[in-house]
Amino acid sequence: MERKILTHIHGIEIFRRKIDTLPKNKELLQRSRSLRKGYILSEVIFWKQVRNKEFHRIDFDRQRIIGNYIVDFYVKSIGLVIEIYGLSHEDKEEYDEKREEFLKSLELKIFKISDFRVKNDLRNVMKELEDYIISHFS
Image (tube, rainbow, N blue to C red; front, side, top):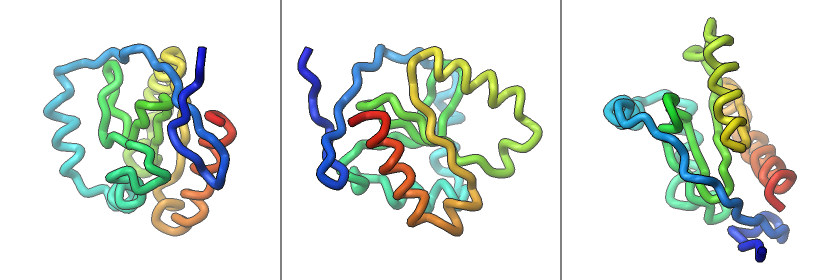
């Protein structure tokens, strides 16, 4: 089976990954739409870095429904979930663990970053995302 190139990061080929159709709880559509309009500062900052394929021509979705969960960002072409952890995740360790297990059961990769780091160390966060994508998808 021939692997298709998605993009290049610093000259390194990044390959697409076949992901099966993901389950989607349509009852969450309204909630995901309203979350997209919400203004969590770290998500807005991150979105400005990746929207319109500005990050290495990679297409990111925002507030994507996967099963009974809504993830912050999703890259369909490689099956990558990006989660920004802030106050909304405090006291939700059990829920987050269950959610992460579910996402991994679908063979998705998860890149987690803190709200604080997005706001205060964005350049390094984006570099770490590049490194993560290179290490998992090249």
